[in-house]
Image (cartoon, rainbow, N blue to C red):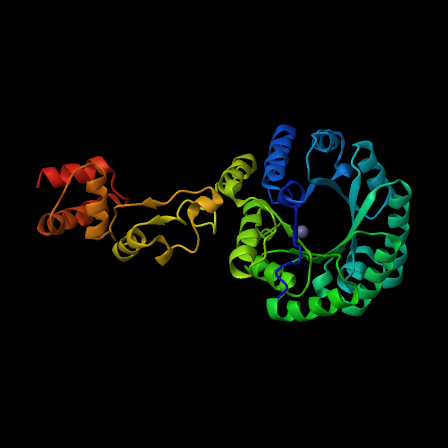
Length: 373
Ligand SMILES: [Zn+2]
């Protein structure tokens, strides 16, 4: 694939992420998350929904006026009132959303494709007349007719729309099928597409990477995948996946990812799962004897990338699955040398104690077991 092609990140933790069930950020938390995202160098921050009321608008205004390098975008339904609300909070970029699948148009709105095309063109024209930068989201695009979407895309980019979101709203995109469809769409209307993938089948990251390979230029993400239902494509997985698996650099600084994930987890009141890909606490923690032995000889044996790349630390635990290499290493770090027989005996006692306590051992416990043998 063309590795020089620029792929940019539109992070929507503050909009789609906050739509995760039970999640609510304060204005201070929103500003802190926006600043942290900006420090990472994401290109667009979808900061909230201006039409949600005064409190949301005040938060949006603070973010819009914080001097961030990222483009701050307000998410709007396709109507003039939402766009006017965005203007009130001094936001200069709006994202207008229109359903494009027959399912959504007919069942949700009682409308049809003709109405959708006319209506979104009116709204776009109104927003452009107000001097706003405009992107458009095609809601439920993965279940829409591709010819209709391509025609709509050509019309809207002709009007001056800068970015078009292809939303896999309920996470039903399949990476191989999606790759083919998005290859056609990006050929028909190049340079404007954003993939917005949900994780209902656990495929949000795979679908985002497939879309980039198909020629999509933007990826929509949220920190640690926070979002509606099963969530969105996680920022950290997309950036690291593109870098290490597709040799595509988004320009985003990944060294703050773990701190960013913890910041968002605290604000969302959702603990970061220990096994969360890329940023979870267990991801660079090794316990089993074979793995610790390998990592101590060469970290790449059992790590796909250096933990420092995402601001994480390697940890070696002594637990039920530890081997002699772990014990030798743990003791040596504290200046205690042990020979093979001593280690073998200690290993027996370590296994018994970890089974009894159902947790790894602290160094003091290992030392006591060693010294009281
Ligand atoms: Zn979404």
